[in-house]
Image 1 (cartoon, helix red, strand yellow):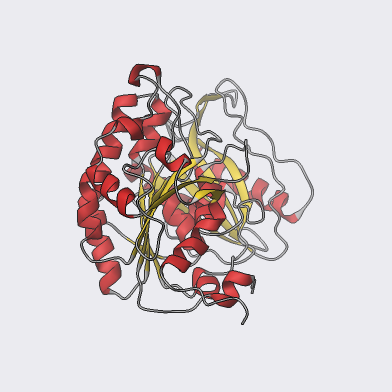
Image 2 (cartoon, rainbow, N blue to C red):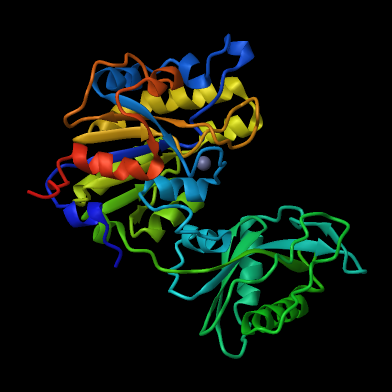
Length: 399
Ligand code: ZN
């Protein structure tokens, strides 16, 4: 088990921490907002109140100038150096649907697709078949047997599913078979290692089963990833953590660090509020809460939708806080500036409320105030130590 300074000093107490992540929160100056950002333009009385009584800063997700995906960006927030702990998409997909991965499993995402008579891809998503159809197709593939491995095929959503191969000596040194474009053939799996043989055999057997069906008559594979177990949140930070997220990938990353993944019913903000309350009733002392719509709006370049997403979260905040947290952190995993319609490298506002803080430096939660805030600028991996310290969960170092 990995033990650094924070792990040595972490101790349990009764304090409860909320880490709320507004995905893609950070933004840049926007012309139509007179140079303000969506967070600056949004009406956020709840977060502003916490900002005034707490401390602000900005975090750098991976390194200056580096644009992260949401997976590594979340690992940074959870205190895991995203460069040291790299996770492939296949692993995230399998964890996201609640599959219990074991160390050494090889996981990959699949898309059901349509091939023409020449074997050329005409639709990479097989007309976005329904999830029911996906479940039916996965059921047909479930009997595939391959020497030397156990094979698990798991439906995800619509045309998406994932496959996990379990056996010795697997590697993830395999290129995607999905060329990413229609009008091409699937990329052949070359190589002589066990993993290459296993994947080729899976593809051949899947092809036999699917070939006469329409529109899903083949499958494409991408994001081969070997699962490596991480030291858990409990081991590292002495926290019994819960995650409340609507999207599979975020549940996956949370599961990877050993958080207890709570289902939300219904699958909306009200379901998330219920799940947060349940997590605390069940004795969890750390809750990770994920809010996705701000990122989607940023990727669409939709400024007003991003403002609405932030305001929607702000309105729900009192309900999330109602069960009683001692320390609350609100931040984003990365910036998704509307003018770029992409994730970016820009630093991300952080708000910490509760525990001893240098408060009174800020009056609102915004990029402008966060950059000048009491916490300054720090790496995303510093957030967990700051939260533990704020909650009185880090002992003194030395006499
Ligand atoms: Zn994200």
